[in-house]
Amino acid sequence: MLEVTGLKKIYETTGREAVGDLTFQLDAGELACVVGPSGCGKTTLLRCIAGLLAPTAGTIRVAGRPVTGPPDDMAVVFQEYGRSLFPWMTVQQNVELPLKEKKLPKARRAELIAESLVAVGLDDVPRSYPWQLSGGMQQRVAIARALAYEPQVLLMDEPFAAVDAQTRAELEDLVLRIWQRLGTTTLFITHDIDEAIYLGRRVIVLSSSPTVVVEDIKVDLPPERDQLTTRALHRFTELRGHVYAQIQRAKDAR
Ligand SMILES: Nc1ncnc2c1ncn2[C@@H]1O[C@H](COP(=O)(O)OP(=O)(O)OP(=O)(O)O)[C@@H](O)[C@H]1O
Image 1 (cartoon, rainbow, N blue to C red):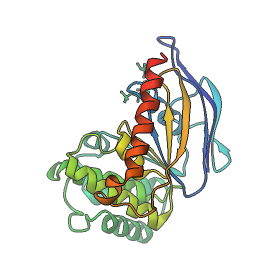
Image 2: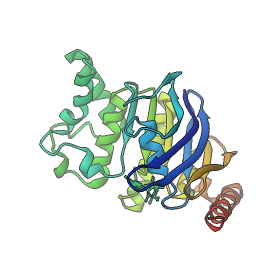
Image 3: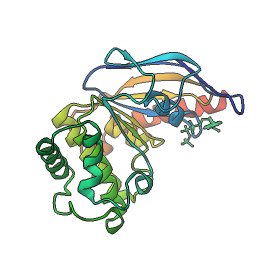
């Protein structure tokens, strides 16, 4: 569903090689997390996949089609929910906007808005404005907007970095529930090793810039995740230690 092959990105303005040579694939329905040291090019990778930035070399394909601009069948949830929602539009209107772009008929739009707001637990505030909601609720709106769009691939760029720890745990479980129900191919970028292991069925560990894949780990934890019991498993601690060591090694190798 998603193929990144030999991706390289040099920022022309500074000559900085952010991404060196990245290759990985995601099968349809997979949920993989990407972790790496700070500044290792995670956002650069995401922008290239989302068609917002042209790679210097290499190719990205979604469902076999090369990405040359923002793909129709992809949705992105960014870290900064405050800046990704339109403050003059209600929750419902924010969710509806990309559906209008997709030229869906009104009745279908209404159905998708209702379903996605129920999925994120916001069906009681469709007529509120983003600024009337908490940070966690605003990020739920951004997730609902991505889901309503019914993307083939969902990209999430550190979506919970700006919310408090309790809201973060709730939103992580929300992502898992939705993924288990819809099976959307999801690439989740985070700097948080625990979050990557908790959510991911695979964790792709990146090196420092110029970035390569250091390791692609299969997370062999029970498929049903629980904030308390999963994180208390011996295997969870082992995986965390392993990923941490890999990232330290990647940093030291600079
Ligand atoms: N527009 C830009 N122009 C020039 N260099 C850039 C640009 N954006 C990012 N970089 C550089 O590319 C490298 C990777 O940055 P990027 O933001 O992709 O990393 P990141 O892993 O997302 O960082 P963080 O963990 O801090 O979120 C950094 O050295 C950064 O300074």
